[in-house]
Image (cartoon, rainbow, N blue to C red):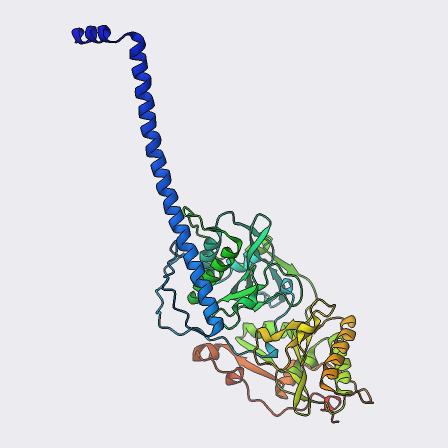
Length: 484
């Protein structure tokens, strides 16, 4: 050993030995750097491959979308859509041969309440008092069923798995954004989770995606609503999200780790203490208290249009009476009241209908709503939801000013139809309030047995489990149909 050391010293000078050590360290560092670059490039290649697969999926979705609108075959791409991560909870595989879910038939009577912020709940306390609750979005998620919670968690993870997307919770909804760009939002309507997307809902006309247009002639950053009522519609929602993200040029993060956003159920009292539910002290109309008390008895009141007019407030009755007189003051126009609405006809052509949603009188007219785009008349297009509707122009009458606006809309419609105004004495159609029990006996309100309806597990009409309906008296002598 001593001889080897002596040999090394004699062979290399101290400066050469130091140079050999430095060169060896540089070679080792170079080798390590190459290994690190190799790993990095491999990951980058995998990310590029994953991104390319996502783009192929998005392109295939757009091809399917265009094919569906054109009425051609939709399964021509051959691209298989595989989820990046497993959904929360076990979800059974769906049969590929299953038929698409059919949308429920709709008409003018299916108009929704416009103001989502006023989606209030009435409940009966243990003491028998009726209380109005204003639930936050968080409270609605916490008190929803397990299916809704699982779909919410799955879709929230899916949206957040895209680069740069952040979530923000407000009282009414949960919004997703990337920088200043709005991407999507979640709302809960009744017991249904809805995803609202920043894309044009008209893109999906005549496709399997049964979306709703929330723009209604006003600016809405996320006008495309999709209701999620099943596992299949959850997968449809993912496809819609892919299309929106493709429009923003946003890719999914390969290393995203999904979280469980399901929360345990909490009682209303606990959520009130946490300030996730507000207790409102506004006065509650008698018939709303009756509805809340009826729900505790597992029954529900199905009110006809006449009953809704009879039990609405004086202000709405005044709007109704004024506009009905105005419509009937045209030559040949007659009125016909059915269970859900009141229709105005001239020469067998439907001109207008009245429906009531919540506390709002809705006027639907046989005129193209596109005529009023960009005007002060904030009309809505019903044809987006009801393809064959005869009265596609919806106008919500909520103030005295809107009465004059509604009259102008009626004038435009009658001018197009060539219907002239006539002299006609005004009639007071604002009939007095009548109790629910009396209207049930007159057959203007039907009592639906919810327990029996659930046990039967059928899709029958509300009349299936109702009390026998009498012919009933007309709304009032003053509300009789007026002839020519």
